[in-house]
Image 1 (cartoon, each protein chain N blue to C red):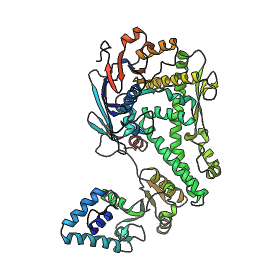
Image 2: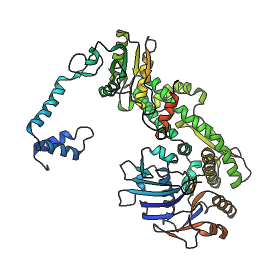
Image 3: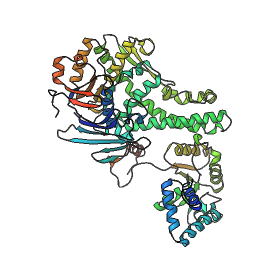
Image 4: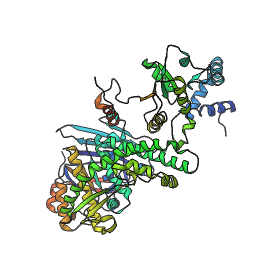
Length: 373
Length: 199
């Protein structure tokens, strides 16, 4: 199984120039608050996917006062001894420069879908918004997951967004008397063609994801049955009809009211919708379980175990669950887990893990830590 | 505060209005002209004047021409029963160089884009349909760009000529010749699959 051997971050967040060597299995990143633990996890994700999962605005990752950021990574591939070297350079306002083994990669979508040789599943504490927040958060979760598996899905989603934007502008122009409605059916056809591809991708994923969620919740939470339920703004079989029926209302509002950009999926526990009725604790556990489900789905689809980057996941869990998680991470191909408190991991777990200490943007490795390969 | 003499500044400012010419390139070109021979500079000025005074759209297909009708429209050897619809006049050159196409053209003048306020009336679509009726065209080959606006334009034209005795086709999109399958992006490869043919 592929894993990351080493990562170098230059001008990334609070790192001026830092190199971290990682081991297969569990890596524990320990340090006080605001030293750069989260930034390190973000940096790994940035190197693997070509963009940061924490913000839509990549320029935030550039170190204060600097005009570019750069990440370099060595990935051990499945074939023993084989290695891939990737590098990504980014200066705000310019195209990202990606290279794999020195050769430039032109498409960010291709790179994000496993171009680095590994994929990641990330967990950051504010990911709870996936369960707790607006439908757009859940759509983004599933779209990012599917895009990491298939670049064509990423392109279809982007193209769909553009066509909806064109259609919305047309609706407003019709409303304001600037356009005749005669091209509306043309844009409807484009919207449906692309929208159906997005829907088909999501529909195929939601069932296996739900099944993986159910088993993750059982392990993390208890016997109550968890499930995912996709809610369509228009049922697939009469999508075209629904879009047509919405014409006059859409013109009045100037927006497209049906289609995958208005859909949602429910996260259910014992039949109850956690977005509306879940406690903070249930929502947090469900978020974690969704991430585990994403890992299983990637594994099922690609045969490769993604790298788990989980930020400060232990602090809000009880001892029993911390023990379960430690075992889960130890058995993974590679996981990088941050914590303020090493005591959250039992001695036995710590002995098997690589410990990486972070203090004010510098990386220190423990002397007796599990040696890397 | 001007750095250079006024005529030089003016030249730089005019040049920097051109597409893909930034301020630095504009400055470099301007100084090249200032240093160069007078005949070359006047030749350029004359070429600019000539193109604006003598070039106009072909009344039949909206390609650029010095005559009422362009060379392609007037060529009796071309197959007048086929019209290839393109977005811009400069799309004709690449198609001509293939040597595969012997029909006529129709320049639409862009693509439908509500975001840019471009409506069917802003394009030469009505003229295309008029032509098809008048000339008894048997086939329209739509060669708009393979992007959102180009494809919507193609769809719209197809909808508009429905009912007329004309076949509407679109260019296939697929793999670049001479390339490796391994390096094709997924969308291109996916489309090539969708458009596969018997051999």
